[in-house]
Length: 121
Image (tube, rainbow, N blue to C red; front, top):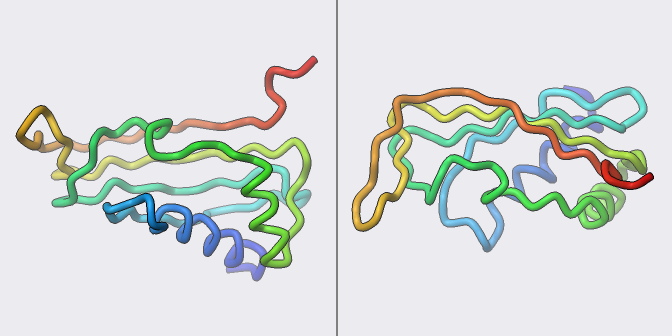
């Protein structure tokens, strides 16, 4: 893994294991574009772990200024028009809360991207 990719990987691992998260996630930055404008992250909701849901927007808030600041503090400058692409894997056997019980997932994958300044003209 390239040094900048490893650094950004640590940033996202720390994000998903911070004080706001009680669950375990599999987190791996799989690529960082040459201009540091696209970060691709593989995020797994793990078998036998309980989550509120499998919706990425519930688990990740795209605060680009904060992400850029954290990256800079780690020595990596990210582009101004940053895109973060998540390849989300819901593992077979991940558990999601449903009322007072947990529902077992069959497992599936999806991709979701967060684009900075997407709505500006």
